[in-house]
Image (cartoon, rainbow, N blue to C red):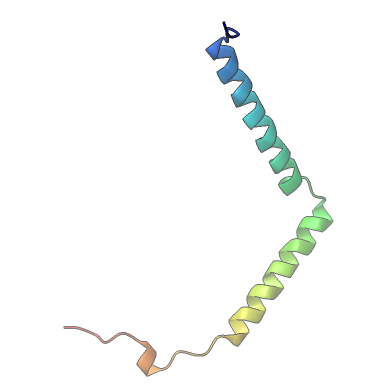
Length: 68
């Protein structure tokens, strides 16, 4: 005969493990110093501005035709 498993304990242990991995992921993502967050934000803004500057201006043919 196999080993008897308490399903409530199994469920609770699984949820505890999922919560631990989520906490570890959050620590990695949000556990940065203020300077690191500021540097990442500046880098993101720089890249967005660079992409925005490379976009072509929309002309009259880019607008959808007006109906009615």
